[in-house]
Amino acid sequence: MKAVVIHEFAEPEDLRVEEIPEPAPGKGEVLISVTHAGINFPDMLVMTGKYQNLPDRPFVPGKDAAGSIVAVGAGVDGLKKGDRVVAQVEFGAFAERMVAPAASCYPLPDSISDRDAAAMGLVYQTAYFALVERGQFNKGETVLVNGAAGGVGGAAIQLVKALGGTALAGVVGPEQAEAARALGADHIIDLAAPDLRDSLRAQVFACTDGHGADVVLDPLGDDIFDASIRAVAWCGRLVCIGFAAGRIPTLKINYLLVKNISVSGLQWSDYRDRQPEKVREVQQRLYALHAKGALRPQITEVLPLARFAEPLRVLASGKGRGKYVLQLS
Image (spheres, rainbow, N blue to C red):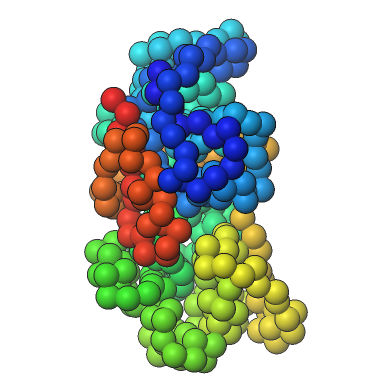
């Protein structure tokens, strides 16, 4: 079978698709014939050896896969050969066939295609847990989503609207602004504006009548985090999701004190590993919102496995819009 294989950590362009033996499922595992795999920003970090969780080499990268089960290991209940599923894993998705823990596989309803399921995996789970679990979002609140044209950001914009909130989209440039509006954003916040430390707050206050953002979801870090904390409303919450913009920021605790602000972080895979029942429940909620038409992944391009490096380079540049998906069969 064909798969992307990491023997040594490298830039995506220096990795190759190889022929490797087909794996076999062990106890509590299933073997999936992968039709589509989602591309995520952490895939770049994994390939270059910069991610916090790295398996022993060689290994196959990729965290989202959709397809059909072709074999079931011992001790698996509730899944059978022929079931269409989406799998959300630490690695293994960039292959024609992959072994996944049964606990990390979710049967797909007929209303969602394999392509959409792969596009809605990690990013929608991350956005939901950031917004609802960590951000403690309440209906009617205003949410600033930084990186709103990207995978997690775009999913978060849709979720804010689906759950009854006002969505402020933090973006860079007219193309990202257009993408955010198409996702349902109520207001655009220019993250490239001069003097961002003051201008971000001014923009947020201008479209909230001086109230600020009740929740901020920030996958970017760097100067954007520093500016965003100043735009949080009284008793607001900021959720740190990542540092795609570069620098890992530090925080002056007096900001929390003077406005009763809460700052938290999200590592979604911890929920998958520690509270799988909660992740499964959220997956059903996402399916239900998709069936209602409230969630629709914005797929920018579907590419063959051999072109896996191209969208990763776009994501690394910060110019990505929507979601990129690999088609394997």
